[in-house]
Amino acid sequence: MSEVKTKITKKFTLYIPKSIARAVGLKEGDYVKMRVEGSKIVVERVPDLFELALKGPKFAKTTFEEFERESEEMQDELFGD
Image (tube, rainbow, N blue to C red; front, side, top):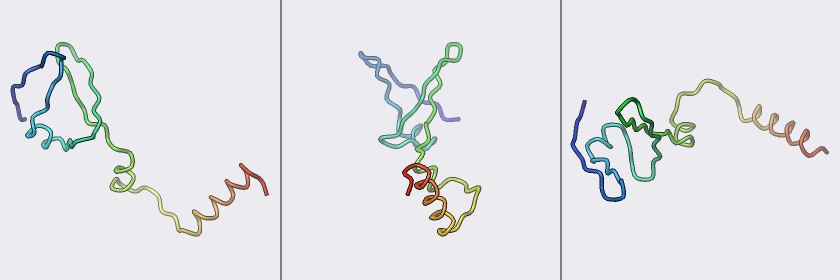
């Protein structure tokens, strides 16, 4: 596990060193969630849902025709003919 000492600034800002950010796949604009566990602060990357949808594991298969049919049925239910 990587370990780096860093300093909390006047306004309690914590800068994540590049080596740590790269080790967990953080990049500018990413969101993180923080929690307290005893005397520790745990910081976790929040996955980007759009990126996850594009690059994540796929668990279902559908054809364009099936998707189009479902879409039309839902539109009929919502907006009627």
